[in-house]
Length: 560
View 1 (cartoon, one colour):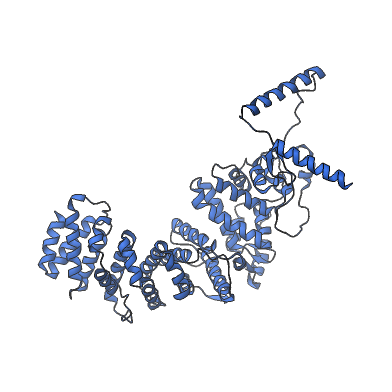
View 2 (view 1 turned 60 degrees about the vertical axis):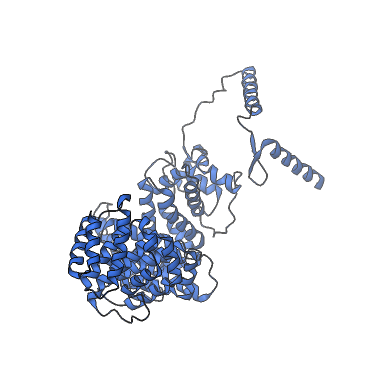
């Protein structure tokens, strides 16, 4: 009934009446996302009628009402096929100021029309394959980049930028060809990086360092939304960017990484928005070539060094909550380097672990990022090792028991999701400089068995990557307890009585043969398969492992 009444007035053509009836329709259906199939034909005709109104010279308020209803109706995929034509798309492009002939954004009164037109385009492109093809034909990506350049350094147009960026994100998501066009032909990487710089109001103090106002206000909701949309579009654009071939690419990625470092050190208007902002920054950092991630840390300035020394001198001797205000505004320092961004990433990772759900989507990106940073950059690895795997003192509990970051990561090493447990184990392995004995010290053999089997390191050794040699960090407490630590569980156990000590030799032989017969039966029935280690440390059926050792012994004898 609503569509029929609105359609009749739209066809009548009186602008004031059209505006009123469409405003009422919009208010009533603002939260409608599911539509009745019985009125489908009426909604199609209403869309067609609205486009006929939009080509006329009607007041701006009437255009806004028409576009609001069109945005609501475009949520229904079924009605878009007949109304998504090249002509109608061009009408929306004109209203959104996406035509090259439109030189400026001087009329503030037109801003609501531009925003609503962009919203309509977002819905239509997302829901219609025909619109997606037309967007390629009409070179929509280039028009959107041109509009972004018009918005540069302009105030009061955050909504225009936000929906321009959202549409860029959708295009780069739905069409992989647009990604390379955006990055190379349209210079989207520096353009969107500048959008982030503007959103964060960055002031550069050095080539890759920005000034951080720790007492400044949080980011506004509008700028936060713009930044999130820019981060998502940049992620699509750089999804295959691990290899840098040109020096100019390396410089641009370092600038972007420096902007993302700044992003990690600021907060949004709410805690949820801050987490969403940081989550998208983490995803984008995962696309940055690892050689360019060195800008996430930077040397302490003279002021920060003085502030750190002053803060430490003024701290009370007892470790109470009174220390927190003193440390709140001081930089996170390690070996003369500012590690604030890495600390934010570590805290973000722990927060995602504590959520206890959606580990693959929410946790693996930040774990993978920290792993690659640690593997490539020594200062980052040493800082994370100090935070995650501090020198062991209390080894009475199992490594997976407790509330420290180490305990939480060790628990993930036996997670049911293969991808999650692999990246958690890999992170700890890299922090241990890929040395098996060091990893087992912190995790126990049982928790690490999966990683070691996959790496062919069950017999010990170390990984393929080279790391610098550090001094021994074993504490006296650990050294004293080490002889009594159970290597499988990784914790100190009280000596247990040996159950065969009181057996006679005949009883021992009987129990041994009983065990052999049980294993033989299980093996013949293929309920289990005895496995052994090959000389290279990988697992193989026992017969094959024994034959390889026999060949090695024969070769050794022949050589002698």
